[in-house]
Length: 124
View 1 (cartoon, one colour):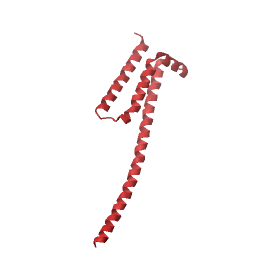
View 2 (spheres, one colour; view 1 turned 135 degrees about the horizontal axis):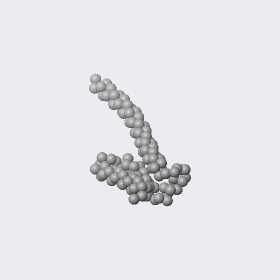
View 3 (cartoon, helix red, strand yellow; view 1 turned 90 degrees about the vertical axis):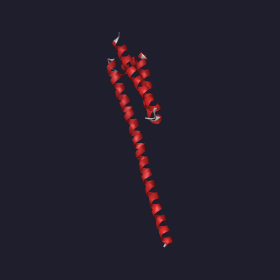
View 4 (cartoon, helix red, strand yellow; view 1 turned 30 degrees about the vertical axis):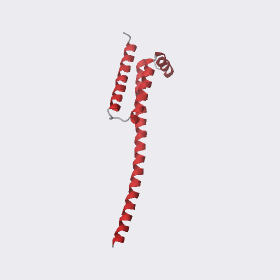
């Protein structure tokens, strides 16, 4: 069997296993679909890129690479970087929401304390 075909088949099998596991986590409510959508998109794109040999051959030529292994390595790095950037974006959003919630909590606490002071003054 051709080594290139074996490599493609192994990579596609791994990606399909990851997709199945992602859907399993979503179905069992252990992973939010909102968080998993970027994973699913990247996985589907990787399957398409790896499955179409004309596309991968053109990519190898455009990148000036000589073999398929370096292209696989570049895809894996690109996948990791895209997931890291997506995670960084989500963490930044959560941090800004946390700051807003903390500020609102402080304002509400101040209002409650003022109301308690007014009630104490009225009861005396």
